[in-house]
Image 1 (spheres, rainbow, N blue to C red):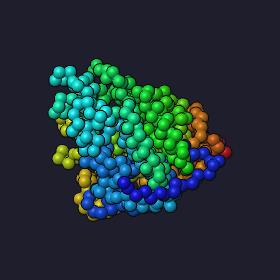
Image 2 (image 1 turned 180 degrees about the vertical axis):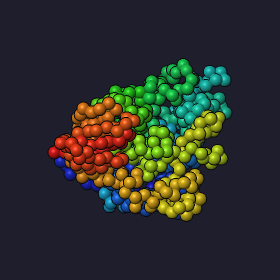
Image 3 (image 1 turned 90 degrees about the vertical axis):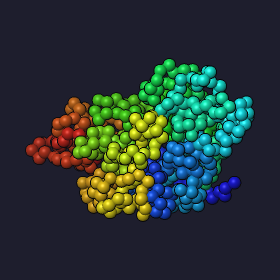
Image 4 (image 1 turned 45 degrees about the horizontal axis):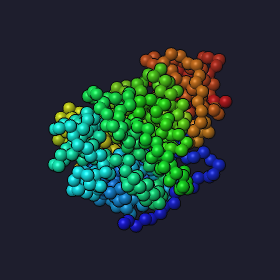
Length: 533
C-alpha cells in the first residue's frame, strides 16, 4: 500500500474549451532532462527544478515518460510496480512535489501508462512462470504451446527477432517488444481491473492525464493468425497486423473514458497508436473514447508542400487533431530533414507550421534548442534493446535520448554534476539553453516567441483553418480572426501579398517597399506568421 497525497488539478471554467484541445504539451524524457542528485541520470527532482524554464518557454503541460520501478530493459517501459517511483528517479514524495509545483506554475502534468506489457520481473510474471502450464496466473499473459520446436506463429518483435520466447516447461509467451516485456492478456478480467485501479491511483494524486503506450496493441487476434511475411515492423503505419489495431481495444478505452470523466478538471488520455491511416486513427478519439491520438503521419511527412498539405487535410478530419515532429522513439527532425544548416532551417519552418495548425502540439525536449540526432555514439554505450536484438545492425533510439544541454561550455553542460548516462557531444556548448537565451535569432528564441504569440492570439490553438491560394511549393492558410501563416517549402524565394503585420518568421522575411500592396519576400524553406485585419 502507498500513501496517497491528493493534489488538486488546475481548475477550468465550465464555459471554456477543454484545455487540451489547443494545448502545447512538452515531453520530458525523465532520464535525460535534468539530474537532481548528480548520479548522471535525470530524475524527478531535476525535472522539478526546471519547471520554471518550461513555464517561461510557454508550454501548457508536461508529459513525463515512465518513472516507475523497473529493471530498465527498455528505458523504464518494462514496469514492475505501476504505483510507485523507481529509486533512480526519486520517490512518491518527489513526484507529489513536482506535481504541486507544476500546478502552482499553471502547468498540467500527464504521465505514461504502459498497459500492453509488464516487466518479466513483475510479481505476476514470476507467479506465471512458477505455476506451470494451465495455472491461473498464466491467464494474465499470453502463453501458448508451440508448433513442435517452433513458436506458435510468425509474429515478430518490434525490436527484432521472434515475438515469442520459450520457457523451460515448453510453453511460449508473447512479447511484441523485448523478451523482458511479456504482453498482458487483455481478455482477462483481472488485468482490466488492475489497470482501472492504476488509473484511479494516479488520478487521485492529481495527475491531469495519461499518455497510453502502445495503445494500439492491447488486443490480439484470438486465432493468432500468421502475418505471412518478415520485416513486419515496416508495416506499422501501412497495414493492419493481427496483433495491432484490433477493434477490441476500443471497448477498453470506453471503460477508461468513464473513469476520466468522473474526475474534475478535464483529465485526458492520449493514444500512442501506430495505425495505417487517418480513418483508423479517428476511431481512438470518438466522443466516448480517448481525447487525443498522436499524429505520426505528420511526423513521418517529408518537407514538401504537397505532402504536408495532404497530411494536414487528412488529420483535420479527426476530432481534436494533434501535431508532433519528434519524440523519444524517432530520429530528431533536424536530422530527418537533412541535418546541418538545411535541417535547422527546415526544422524552424516546420515548428511554425505545427504551432499554427488547429489543435494540440507536442514538443519533445530539446527540439526548442534545435538538437540534432547524435549519430556517433560509441557502440559500448548503446542501451536500446533494439541494438542487441537486431544483431547490432539497428543502432536504436539512444541518439534522440542524449541529455539536454543547459549551460556551460563543456559536457555535461549543466545536466548533471556527474558523468551523464549517455555522452553529450562537445559541440553542444553553443546550443545550450544558456547560450541561446541571449540570441534573438536562436531556435530557442523562435520557440519562445511563437509560443507567446500562440498563447496571446485569439485565432490560434483550437479552431478551424482555411487554405489560401499561393505559389507552387507554398502552404498558406488563415485562422480567423486575423491570422495568416505561410510556409515556403520550395527551393526559391517567393513573393506573397499579405496585408498584415509580421508577427514572427523562421528566417529573414522582408517587405517590398516599391509595391502599392503589402508584398513580402519569403525565402526558401521559411515560414512566417502575420496578424491581419
